[in-house]
Length: 197
Image (cartoon, helix red, strand yellow):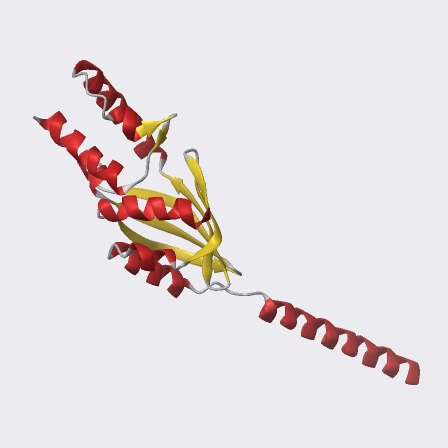
């Protein structure tokens, strides 16, 4: 009888220790705060480049699946400048949180997309990893159908440039990659204006 009581007490004690340990793990795992992303989007949408950069970790990595990977705040600054010049707008939808990670859908609009007949680009899923209350990593998956339309549009643009002996495109796409800057963004708008004439 005493043996059984001790056995049950030890079992209860073990269960209690396991519960405390699990509670500690759950509490010690940082939970991402979606208000960080919401505040960042508001700043981004107001085109406050310097303020928007304050939301990024120094070692930020941003991967646009199938397109490019940018690393560090310096490269992110070129994207923010490009976005600001093109009046970029980001909208957060349908987010879920798992520890330090936010899984969501992001809807993006800007003047460049608008000029080629794309109302908005949906990145689904988009993953934000938050560390020290800063954006440490972004992984965004653009919708495939828009990617196909963009490729078709780029063929038209290259064809027009060749036919009209316009070399602007050579300054905007180097080594198969877009140049991201305010100057490049403005040059794209000028090129679209010339193509409409």
